[in-house]
Length: 385
Image (tube, rainbow, N blue to C red; front, side):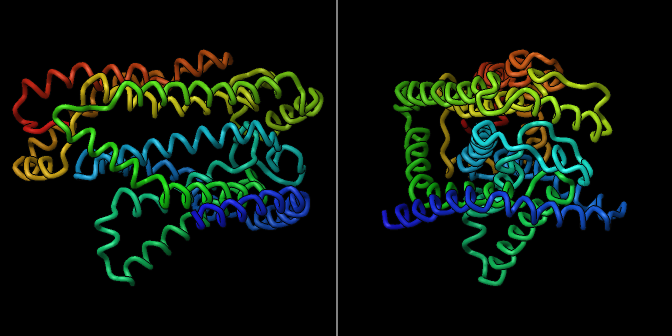
């Protein structure tokens, strides 16, 4: 409890300092970004684009860990935490509704083109959370058994990756230093509280439930997670509505930002409307629905009466040859890929984007019903999830 109290006090103090020094950090960032962009070279921009864009490598690693290693449960929880971070960041952006540097600083060039609010930085929150939780959560046995030197190298690599991702966002004109630091503050607090107070109880609960022959996940848990998701999205809708009604920001300022996006973004061929799904509060609302991933994972496990025993999986998995492992991989991935065409839906209506782009419902159905019979019929699996 002492860690929780100390971390919470430090967290609150950091939020207060962010409010006090926000403008000073913005001014410092403007000078740094302009200096960095003056040194622009094709190689430098390619390097920063790499760190900015390759943040998505971590969900892919978690998926491979889920498919090919015994630590499936931690991999699923890790993916759920990624979706939670994206959703939480989107709500915070609607709460802070702060512009990106290239929107208001005429000398800053848009070397990328994000169109939602900028504070706190989603890349800062995501890269810190994903790079540090991956070895601590998904690969704990491998990580903790390593010599101190190897562990130090891994932590050093995660730190450098997090820093370079943040620096890339400053260089590209997408975030200020204050937006980056606030993203780190939120992620650091969440990581600390989760690892010390939440991770082990969650792992134990699911292990006990999924390894039991007589019990599975309870409908009570499904209901609690479902209601929590509804409340979470209601909060997101509230702040989206407040921004939409110009409670915080006047329409003139938003129109100026839209004109800047049109002028500075090379891939923007037309001026967007304030209520477009691609900008401001509507884009943040869309991304906040990532939280539904967690509900559909739990709902899917309950519907399929999913079971999983690590020891049994390890023994059976060792008996599979490489052809069987590849076949198993394809059977897991192909149904998931069949609904990915929905990711290419593009509409100015935010609700079309939410219910089209968020294909978790279809994925849930495709991952549950066919596999329920596949596991019974095809002996190649020899184990249950």
